[in-house]
Length: 309
Image 1 (cartoon, rainbow, N blue to C red):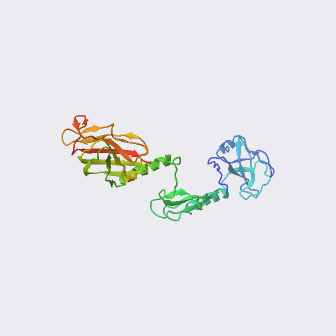
Image 2: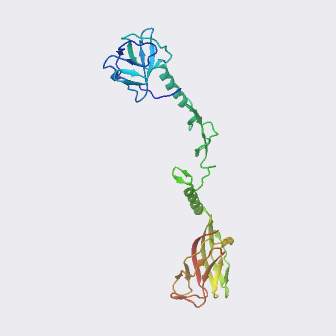
Image 3: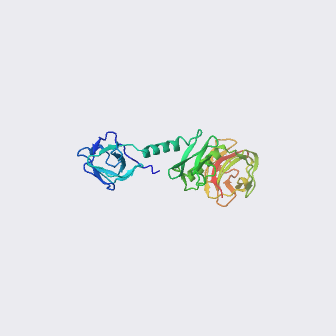
């Protein structure tokens, strides 16, 4: 079936031929002023019937109308036979078996194909539909050319490969990956970490430590808090968790909580360097930092997020 759009004139007047026609012409004219009640073909072709109440009945599919002239006609439509018609032959708008059959076929293809709740109809070929049923709750539809209807229901996003340039409903693969990383970060558990501090003059001695890290992809989050029973002297290197290596170079703030006096922040001396597996900071006994002096019993605390290789 073609399923083409057709026009149906609800108020087309009964009219007659203005001049006889043979069985092959593709245009005819009706009585003056009566053609205007018929479609002009812009919205689709339409059917008329000639001599509908006699043996010479013929249905014609009309393509267009200008004034009282009907043209682009397909003669002998809807199973009738092309035949000659005399001047004054009756002309009427009509609905055909073709119209009814197409409507019935659509109803059968749509309502007739739905067999269960959740069934989805998609095209299986030209003018043909097929139903696909979901297998379980929360499944989504994905395209799959190997399936009869061109797709299937599956668990949400299972088996869908998205690179950073792919998009789903305007959302890029990179955005989806970032969102997944954020969720993973929020849900992940922090891992306890015992730092190893080495001094280039004398090593400090740790009295307590509460350190933990969270690795999400290539992003390393750290919480560092150590008590120093002996400050030692010189510059110090702190090993990164799990033997990780810094991918970039930068600095961040570290807080010194002295045994006496007020806490203060030392910004410049806490650094990480690309390619190294350590953080570096400087705490020398008796060295002045703001209004405080590093001393035995002090606590060093910082949080940091860096990219690792």
